[in-house]
Image (tube, rainbow, N blue to C red; front, side):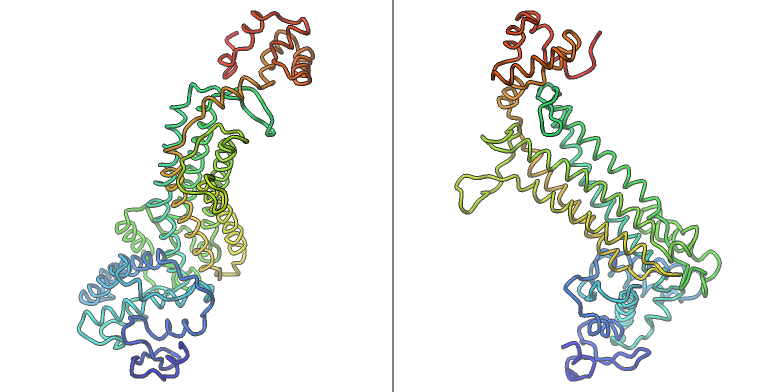
Length: 475
């Protein structure tokens, strides 16, 4: 079908657009132009669409540059207004259906930049009362792409999309989950349970203390992401082809980035070195690493919760999870920790995305990295699914989760590791003998102490008190 557009066999449904390689037939109802149409033919790989968040960011780039260029007299006020209106429609999602390109294209993202240029130019021409494809009074290269190259605009749009999605979607979702876990930590601060190391019984702690660790992990994760954002806020815009800023004017990059900051409300600024920003994408690699770190924490939290909730009768059973849906098509009444499983898959995917981003980041050669579409697709997927899963995990699991205090108390009472409280009084060797005797004879620690002649009942009760074992000793 796409080849039909190129050879003109669907003339009755297409219009002719012209680029440097000649004429191309484009669907009459689409705002894209010749280069976009060529890309649909030559890069029909897979079903992964160029992330729409990147397109929205690109709309802001084009609007900001048009405003700055107008201030310098490079565009007329009429031309600027047309570009500004069309670019705003791109940025706000009005034109989403006109961005059909796949991720797997040229590594610079040139076809996507031109897709944006063509849509804005055609929409601007339409606003001026002229037909699509006329490039009158707005040309995609001469006006929309004025003083820009794909090589500086695409990485700028990448940074903008990442920063916007992190600030508007990921951080709020993680913070909600963090707050939900904090509520449980406070609610369960007095529930003493047995701790576990190596999946074996250890000394006691409170369920609240256990969950406070999860809260702090998410605090640290958000802090690492916020730190990585500082590099993301630096934009390559103004570097043009190789970072020199050829064909721009002094202070263009600073003024354009300042305008973007005004339009987005985020502290974007020009990069201190465009050669680094365009030849490599280390800031994006660092952000991917921060996202991986968050994923690692979330996987640990999800695994801990599903382990503590295992059972309900043959596992640990210390947590009762919300029963959101049937767990089996075969076993009646079965309920599974599905939110934990979804989170585990998301975390795993994010770790895989980070590996891809790292390899892609290392693939930059000389003055440009040609893995840009892969990098932004991976990053935005990671941000999106992390944010979504944190929201679901909080709403559908954490908020309705309950402590099974009866099972927690049973495990605490049966644990041999309460013997650790006897070490200061009896010494390590005798305390070990107590634990071994109790285990071998299937009896309590108290009975073992009495049988071995180490302590009487009152002495044991004074020394072995779980409430005294959840923090430093007073003496």
